[in-house]
Image (cartoon, rainbow, N blue to C red):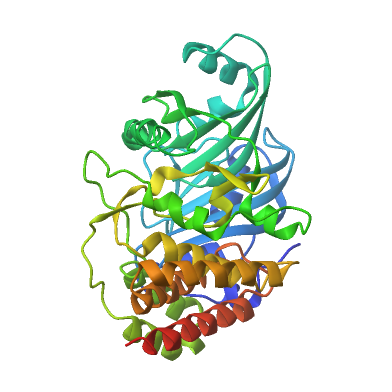
Length: 403
C-alpha cells in the first residue's frame, strides 16, 4: 500500500475538515465507498495532484488500483470538497461532504468523455467541418473541473481538442480568432458550446523549454521573445488578466498552511512586494512562459494557452517569463542556457519597463510557483517550496535596489 508524503498526511484545515480526509491517505474513504458501490475493492492508490485554497475548497486527483467489479483495473479519480460541482457523486459522512468522479466523467467538463472516445471525437470533428476518418486521442493535460487538452492524431492530422467550462468556451473561441490575426496563435476550427469543447489547429515546433534543454537547438533572440506580448491586441470585451501581485492574497494563506515554518518569510516577501499599484491597461497573454512558446530553427512559431488573455499590467508577461525561468534554471539539465536567456531578457525588459516593478512582479510570480511542488506532490516538496520562497526573497531584494 502506498502512503502520502508525511508532511501532506498531517495537513489540516479547521474550516474545511475534508482536507484531512483527502490528504491523510492515498485511498481516501470517499473513493473506497464509490468503488465498493460498483462492486470492487481498492487495493492501492497514489495522490497525484492537489489544489487547495484554505477554508474554501480542495481538489485532489488520485491513481487508484481496483480489484473486481465494473471498475476493475487502474483508474484516475478526483475528489472535491468545499465547491462540489453539480453532477459529481456526493459522499457524505461525519467528516464532511465530498464530490467524487472517475476521469473522464468530469461534471464540469462535459465534453471530456466524448473527446477521449475515438469514434465520438471523429464525429465531433466532422460536425465542426473536418474531413471524415478515424482518429486516435490522448489526454495530454488535465486540471480537474477546469480544463483539459486532448491530442487528436490519425486521419485528422495536427489537431487538439481543448475542454473548458461551457460558459467560457465562446469567449475562448473569440480569443483565438482575435489573436490568430496578429500572432502565431493556433486557429480555432470551431467549438461546441454544449460540450465546452474547441478544436484547435496544431502548431509544430519544440517548446522553448525543450529548446533550452537541447544544446544543439538555437535559442530565439531575446528581442523576439520580448516583442510578442507587445503585439497582443486589446480584448474587445475589456476582460482582465489576473495580476501576479493580486494573486498573493490567495497564495500567502496557502503557503502558510502547507509550510508554516516558512510563514514569516512569506509574509515578509509579500509585505515588500506591496499591493497592486497599477491599473489593468495593457493587453497581455497572462501566462507567458517558456512552455507556452513553440520554436523552430531559432524562430518563435507558436504561442499557446491564451485562456488567460486580457487587460493586464505592463510588466505582467515579462515577470511571468522571468519567474518561470528563475525556477526552471534550478531544475534544468542545462542551467547555464536558462540563466543566460534570463539575463539577456531582463536587460531588454529593463530598457522598456520600470526595473523595480518588474522585479517585484517577478518575486510575486516565483512565490506563486512555490506552491507547485506541493500541488504535484513532489517527493521533496517541502524542500523545493523553501527553495522557491528563497528565490522570491532574492528578487525582492533586487527590486529594492531600484527604489
